[in-house]
Length: 460
Ligand code: BES
Ligand code: ZN
Image (cartoon, rainbow, N blue to C red; front, side, top):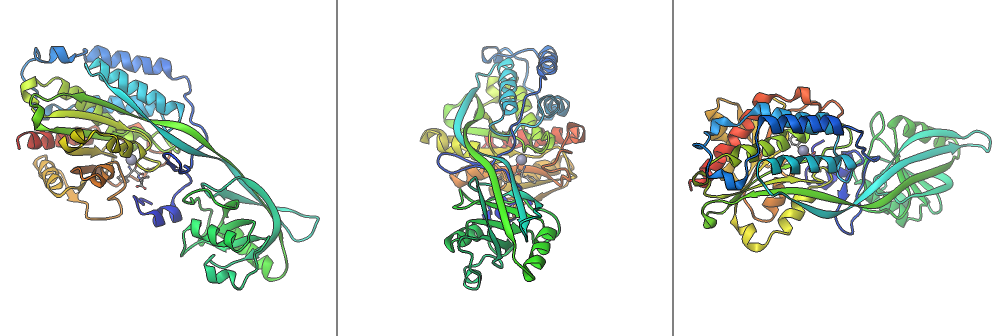
């Protein structure tokens, strides 16, 4: 499930959405739509504005004594989750609703005196409009079989005899003549992309991969394929295998898809520190969600905590802020960490070197225990902070989630980073990831842990 940056697992098991920057092709979803929630959002904006008067940087010095780290408001963060996931809803990269979330975050930050910037980056999105498979053993009766596009498959329609080709390993094609035919291949052992490439190299006109267990499977290639390719269920595959054992089949495979150029965006707001040489700390979270659901925990929760950290810290007196603070809401994380990678790669050298830590909050509102991954010192500090709060917390060791969120973009660039999340969310990447399941106490803890980390870094 959580494949992180392990492409094999990802390609073998993940649903059909992904994306990439520049020349690589990205998979997608059917277009997200902003469905007239402007009025509701305006109410949220008004409510938040009324309860929390704008504080401009010019006014910061006049603020009363600094807040203690215990002042982080999980209730305020809960309202942000409601605005992002409840009012705006699902926020897939490249969609109108993602842009609404960006506008919302920018408005919030401005009300607290920030001058946020929206950093855009190119995104190519793969738009899957569906695949069809039909087989027939004689000219009369065609049988339709439910099929799913293999993400990045080229579009096209082919009609040809269906032949089996085992698991699609090179040796499987020695015993099967797939030239000018459609290859029927079993899932497993190889990545989908390799199966399809091997079949195309052997002359196949199209590829149908059947699941190696019950039910359908959604998978992804790693880039555009040479021939159309789709998956079918294990049951359908078995049925076709049985039919082919006793006769011939003619198959038709149609893949309807297109690659579109869109743009992704990050929202970044800075609060300059009192000592220019003291470095900076980035509080980061991804603002996008998967198309499947509203993304309240993944990652309305982390986005909300970053917003409320910006709010909270805007009220600290300048003397309480030696280091520069950067609040970053990243786009297109769910498609492969694109926003954070773009941010890191486009940092001027001096800014990149100045970053003491990226504190990445992703899925911090559901679950029973804290888990921290990333740079050893930061993980130890976070464990200490959770311990101070009397909370259960464990380090993430190497595991499959190590590259699963935006902290990985910072680590890749040699910047210290810590990944803060909670285990385990049963509604991960589903329509069930709704605001009511986000625990405000967990948000309070997340904000408090982040502030404790900041205080530790600032006092070094
Ligand atoms: N929020 C998840 C990562 C995650 C999963 C955090 C479970 C905590 C618990 C993130 O948005 C995600 O889904 N990442 C992908 C990888 C990414 C590179 C596309 C994943 O984990 O598969
Ligand atoms: Zn996430």
